Image 1 (cartoon, helix red, strand yellow):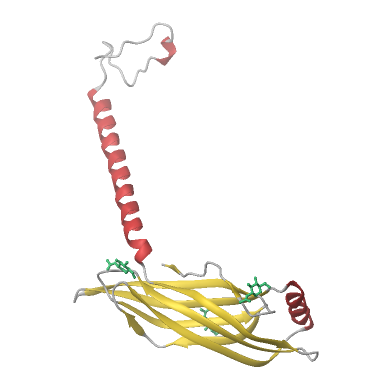
Image 2: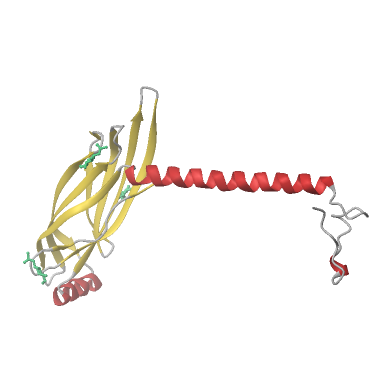
Length: 211
Ligand SMILES: *[C@@H]1O[C@H](CO)[C@@H](O)[C@H](O)[C@H]1NC(C)=O
Ligand SMILES: *[C@@H]1O[C@H](CO)[C@@H](O)[C@H](O)[C@H]1NC(C)=O
Ligand SMILES: *[C@@H]1O[C@H](CO)[C@@H](O)[C@H](O)[C@H]1NC(C)=O
């Protein structure tokens, strides 16, 4: 049906859209149809990407801290810290169709900017839909603390709460058939919180993000 120009709002009568007889210019229809097709295509592409993301993302290989314990925490008046921490890192491959390889794994443990230890692991494979635990025991004696850091340790004892920074990175890859692989880089950055009194780990979400 041809739109009839409004008599109450003559200002809105468009010179561009109408012929003198009030029919819409076919070119305008063409542009409108192309725009509609493009808009629908963009929406469909968005939905496809979103579904792909939802389907793949939860299965991307991840590393996470699944357990830990503060075995020892001792500080003296000279400003030396002695500690032992057990950390279990789990490498998980949620893909039911491909083996995952984990490599270039490093973790840095630090306290208030003071490096305590660097943990590494050689490359290994995790079969389809399974996981592997890496057990670390970090033993550190005589970590020299600044007066500020000593004060922080004092407060940690008082609050019965101490936090260590745990940063990690790994390369992961899925072998896809004989031809190729999908590679990811994953990063982990979390606080490991413990109760100094009994060494209990206060669990928090500590899982890598992948790119
Ligand atoms: C993956 O493993 C979980 C348990 O670890 C199991 O419940 C699930 O069925 C497995 N999925 C596939 C596709 O094998
Ligand atoms: C750990 O520290 C080393 C040396 O400072 C650095 O090369 C490495 O990239 C660090 N790893 C992470 C995961 O931050
Ligand atoms: C350790 O202490 C905290 C609080 O001080 C308590 O909540 C926790 O249950 C204790 N854990 C164990 C294993 O005793």
